[in-house]
Image (cartoon, rainbow, N blue to C red):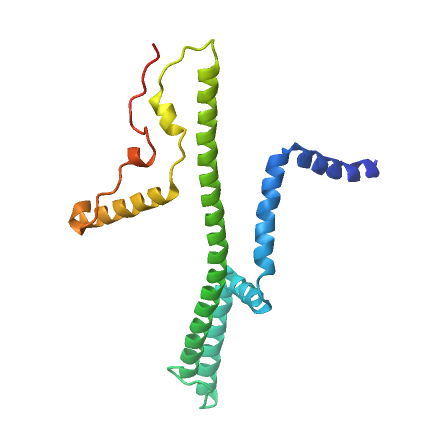
Length: 218
């Protein structure tokens, strides 16, 4: 009985893994390899900085810091009252110096750790952009193939669909980028023509057929 209970979680885990379709499993593995490659490129010092940053980011660090400051101040005040001397007399210059140094170190740790995270975020953005461009090109190709099949099918009345013809042409990424830049400059100045540059191309010029009325079948 115990053996059956022990094997049950393993069987459930195997069933859950088999539920994932192959293409989703490949996507998960690709993302995992991306993160693994990013971690493998990190140096020992960068990994140490990440661990220290994670330690500082914990709520317990705030409590430990407040407790250390309270103990330091209380000990020095007690020594000054009982023995007439203290290591750090009010207004506690040693404590202020330690706090300033700790603030500089923590800021540096956060910046270094954030830089590594920004590198990973940049890789994700590049991957997302490449996938978006590929998806748009594949969609345009699919539309072109469907239009070709429609024209070759004798059972479907042949008609002119200018919107489908325009959507079968993939958008030019460079043209889209220039359009975004022009729109941003125009929004900043209030008038695209006031900057001395040509107005930003319209959406219909970037993706032909966009915004046009679709002809009704006869």
